[in-house]
Length: 468
Image (cartoon, rainbow, N blue to C red; front, side, top):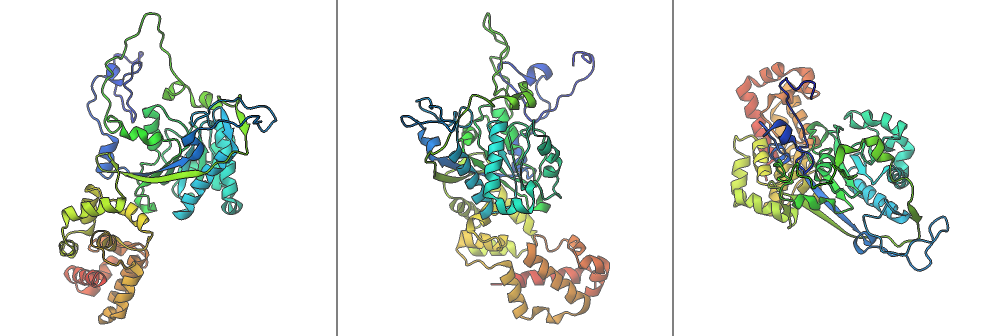
């Protein structure tokens, strides 16, 4: 920067720093353009999220070793109160590591065992222990491919070689990776659906960087939102008023008392290199076992479009927001059956704070589409699965009026709807799906007698599917 001081310098950053010691604004001046995390989520470019906050008994209560407690090597354990900051940094409780691994595994088993997951640990030694605990909990899938759980840290040559595979959306393995600092920044894993926090994070910048590993969208892979599983109450930082906005220059920037030097803490983000920081904390730990560890609480929390914590259930919150737009069922049915694109209705509900993906997960039925989900949540209508709606169409023998290419095309649309749903029926790009792409869009439209007749037939089929 000094060498090219005479040139125009353009600064770009995803994590602007405005502290007492560091200031982007001081060097570059006021930003000419800003775009916040909140804006990215609101505009649909970044994935919204939910938080699963897990409370483990010793994390919440603290731990004081009983009289005469020995570590795993037979040495006496210092008699003092240990808390969540000590765990895995000063004191290692084997049962706690296993309990965290069990919670992560239970979540994946209830949702998707192949959901890409990053587990952030205190240091590389903690990451190694966590990997082994996860291997033990997922022995069945690790037997299929040992890369199901990997440690990717600065000192792990084998693990670092798998980093490109982890971020590649077309690669199945690795699925779960444990890390410390290496994957906090610069890892563009669009399919990452679960971020696990099992380390204390003081810096809001580091926290934003870690959250950023999950905010990528990848609709083609079913990645529309992500989950944060928090074991250390790190997500309390969401309550900070300045979390969602671009920071302003710190009023105390550049002020130093006489004799004070420019110091940095280990939490000061990128001051320490990844390799040096991850090499710390290997020694001086006390290892114990035989401690009663159990999960006391698990709270699922959501954040609305304003970045505020939703204190009511996601179902009640969504019902209230839907009813603000559609007071009665007939209003919603009229909008749904109109010529308005279905995706436009879904996007509008999303702007109102209705997270359909999270609602579908909470309902426990992944096979109902957005229409049934809204009717069920807001208007207490019994939902039908997509397969049930397709069967109803077939029972009515609706398709018997068509034959040849037309019948084949409408049959394919029904199968597509039953398999993954259809948002925009009038989008001719749907003709590019197999096996319709083998027939060709022009041939299909010609078989119906032109564009108008084609769209009319598709609209009628859609109406029949959603008929009560």
